[in-house]
Amino acid sequence: MWLEVSGEVAVVHRVGGHSASRWPWRLSGLIIPVLLAALGLGSPGAAQDRLEAAGLRFRLIPGGTYILGSPGQPVRYAGELPEYRVVLKPFYITVTEITNEQYGRYLAATGRRPPLYWQDRNLNGPKQPVVGVSWQEAVAYTEWLTRVTGVVHRLPTEAQWEAAARGSLVGQPYPWGSESPDAGGRYRANYYPNDFAEDGFRFTAPVGSFPPNGYGLYDMAGNVAEWCLDRFSPARLTPFCHPEARVLKGGSWMSRARELRVSFRQPAAPEKADGFIGFRVVRLLGGSSPGQEACPP
Ligand SMILES: [Ca+2]
Ligand SMILES: [Ca+2]
Image (tube, rainbow, N blue to C red):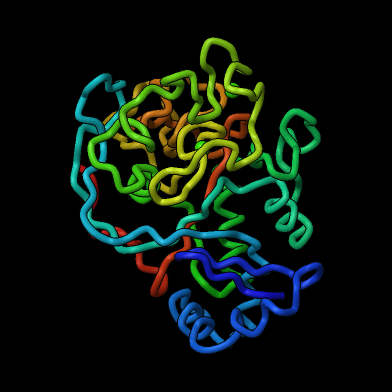
């Protein structure tokens, strides 16, 4: 195995097929101890095993004050939060949605039952995001990651998700700014333009098929809508909304352009499993504190 350091991303690869000449500088000096300290992990050998078990790539999202929610322009759906300010601690978030390949490692390790659509050829490519995973199953995956790595992993809160999705931009409707997802004839996400396949993908796309946002995160708009940890704000529930509903963010391959806005949110019952729903994972720094110092109104 070798440990790659790229910005704030840490990935463990198997050595097979790579030149041994990469070892001396990659595994020398202070790089490894510093990186492991940043990740809150222990000895290099144990940490490598733990990272490999996770098989995931993360980006560090800086702590600080974020302005989230919608200013109301160009549109704000009922249920979206008006603009609010939140203070977040720094946290890591996966570069992509969790893929079928990554979820398959979890199934193999735990013997849990595969999710819906696991056998659906339109949706089960190794690099396509896992779908058909309920909120409870997504939480169980993060708990497994926590167990095998010894570092707290969790679903993102809505505030963490949205701060990450904005990619350092302020007051912009989309992860890339204000342009529509198809401006200039160039597609910026997998969604439902005038036809499902007009952007190149009839169903889910392999993760990373479109350009990343300013934080290097892929598919924060579209592909699969992503589970957040939070309950959907009770004050905004309709009589038809599940009382335990959780927040979905980002829109999906079944969404129209307006639903790709970073402030857009959908309620879904925690047991709901569907072909448009997936998730990504947050790794907390410094133990199990919630990572959020203020809550939206
Ligand atoms: Ca599409
Ligand atoms: Ca997504």
